[in-house]
Length: 413
Image (cartoon, rainbow, N blue to C red; front, side, top):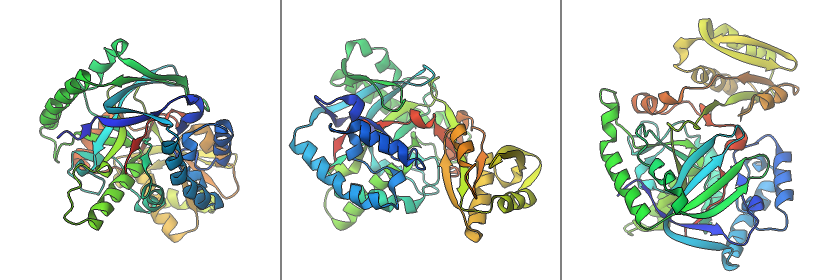
């Protein structure tokens, strides 16, 4: 069986799509006003904001309140027949980004038995970055009893020859259009087409051949080849995996091979598409002594000819050069220092996608921001295969507003 499969995909009917679709829960984590606007924009209509928990609300009074409402609202949407179902299907997606480029993708489901997020994994589907296990339980509380899943996961194929998604794109004029609308809060435009019947069979045949031969392009490279990499939403996929493993542990000896919890919806994208751009994820540390942190970083983690990284404290800024002996990537060197430093000193770290947001947040009292360079996307698969998972929050697929919006759904009960 392939690791990526067609699914029984749910989409809302007779719902204003501009109100329905909202951005991934792990965006704008330090900007509660963004999420307040989203709730205001979606008021009076079914919306995915009522089915997900923004991470900006974690640790606030809103967390318990909204977590309790999510499963109730999912059940109500199902009872009220909000969704139309497209069985054993894929959805070909084109996302028009802020710069006008079009990023294609294919919505389907992955087999969680083929995915392992642990360090040293040799599974067909692997995490690209370290999974922070502490981030899983709040998501489990939402998913554990949920009748539906809504994905913002972006999965990557290292498809140099463009044999998986591109043949579907070439035939999109022959496919049924499912949606076509502008996304809220400056998210650009999105269009989706139904892929079913013979087109699904043709895709599955291409994927079977692709998977059987994927190792040939990594010959001579140490490590076990992989078929897909999780590009975005790894903690959401890890949560789905954890809930599935929990289900298996509670049902020893029961055949769960066809259980819907074995699978999770994702959007598959080709890393070699021209619209696929890796953006750096910056670091900002709050509630710390920024001058003391910078001083220790300069004295212990820097070297001549190192990775140049710009820092911001209030209205001040400068450049440090991180020692290349500490890591193969600038983000690896910086993250290693921050992990060590924050074990011994006060401070709270957040991960920021946009340059201007980072600079603005670093102006807060007792804050420091670090602006990181982007990683070359060609390094991704070979790096994970040869060296294992990368430091957490190494890269981002596009700017914050270019993340996947919740749109399609699937029953998991």
